[in-house]
Length: 482
Image (cartoon, rainbow, N blue to C red):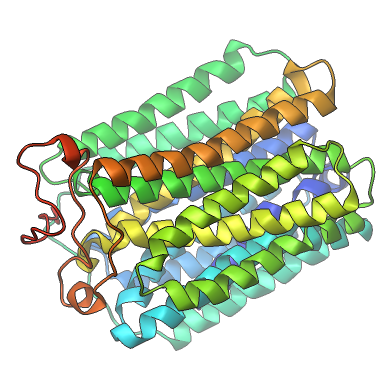
């Protein structure tokens, strides 16, 4: 049920690049309007992570899941049957919003709702479903673009959304609100909505404006600042909606930085390589060149199953960032890349993403009690979504506008991607060293029993006089749960 709910938007987010011109011509939409639809849908995805947590505190969670499923079907049908700009944008934005609503509402209960012996399989299937769907997106988009159409893909997506809704009904069981006594402050949702919409709107402006003017820079800058205000507000709040303060120890910070770096670098690298290769290959051939990314996702899923409950989880995330860096460097160093270079590079990117993002998310989640997983997952996904979907348009602007020609621009932007992935690895290593962390094995028995899976030292514990080390365990840090 969860996989069926997540696949529609995840596939589209990676498949739309070769279809934007076809959609625009069929619906009479300008390039700006098509890009706006994608930007606002990404904003909806980021916003939904916060909104879902707010609604889960006060409303029966599985009943809300039914509403989210209905809205996902409505949005998918609207997009597939669109006859104009407003109908398409409305449907696609609903797809983005409802995907994250379903993600935050359904994934944490899926992880914690079964015995510890099942979590390995749950994590592996989620990893394969989520990253496999994203990795297959370019090929699926290429197949559809080669047929000079777009509606068949959107109708298939609508069918998957209907399947998700049916499975929501078939797996229904009454689940009460998470915490009816929690504060009903609308401020976090308002800040998330304002920040996400402004930031993604500004990023969209960069794709259609050759000059860096106030129309793009002002909303982009303001949106990022508002998101930072949201994080600060929740850090200091006595009864926060999002759990920020407990995430500021060594391992959660390392995991979040690694996930953000990998997401931003990988999405941007695939988009940028598509810019330079689009004139050399047909959409179908270009999609086939990205097929090794899916192979990389399969390989990492198998390794993830082996390492998930061992201390190798930490090294696996680091290896993923190194593979991602190697794939980006390979493509950036040989522009325009040959067929072999592209195949090897995209395969390394697929391995890098699959090996870094999911392990990093669990490194953050295992550092807190599982009762807080939903709100931890929300803040992590919010930051990952902002990094993945907002940085790519900025780098595309650099590639197509700042430099004298597209090839030099793409090369420069790809080196920035390499810097992002390498920085994620280096910062993670530095934080582990500064925290005196020796990668531990997660204790699933403790985690399912209501404690943390391991002890995460404070940031910079090496230079704190009173900081405890993993060899001096005390009770896990308190998690502020409303």
